Amino acid sequence: MDWKTGISSLAHMWMNFLGGFCPTAHEQKRELEGYVHDADGCGKVYLDAGELRELASACNQAADWLDKRAE
Image (cartoon, rainbow, N blue to C red; front, top):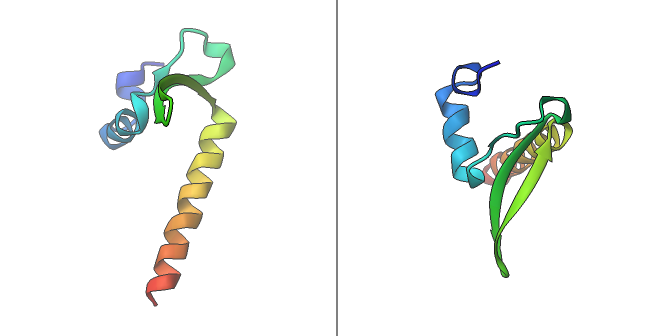
């Protein structure tokens, strides 16, 4: 599958915003490689498919909390 056409431009925008994430060369690992910034600087990280789903779930929970707080 082609990364450039396999996901939406919006998904690409978010992957770039979150740390320049793109697929690794090892398809069987099901990982994206990107960079995160912390107090020590910038470091390379790998997120697998399961971790990406956990991140999406966490974002949904945070969004739901914000909506409930605003009610």
